[in-house]
Length: 155
Image (cartoon, rainbow, N blue to C red; front, top):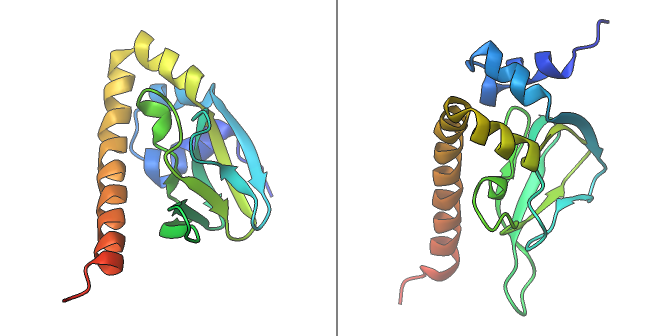
């Protein structure tokens, strides 16, 4: 079986599938393969948002904490999806936890490297924003639905 390079993986990942090949090459310079075991954390709330992840295999739980309560899962993401949007917005801190539910294989894209490349090439930055804004909107929508389910009980 032939092994895929990071550039090929990025090009064929659903999040970047129709991205201009020159942008894929720029992005792949910021990439590395990562692996997380079941129950390992990809990141924790309030830590520096130093990367985002293209999920290749496995499922990741996105969780928020409330004082005196167990963490609340507001979304599960899997193969072909992304984890981590906070790398894009100052102050570059995670606003939730991300925990592997099973073995997760992913591509981690270094946030500082990507931000520098976006500053140097505004077209790349615009292309990334067009991809991340819908993902952010979906995450906000899912969180809203969870809150309605939790607090929206009829009187």
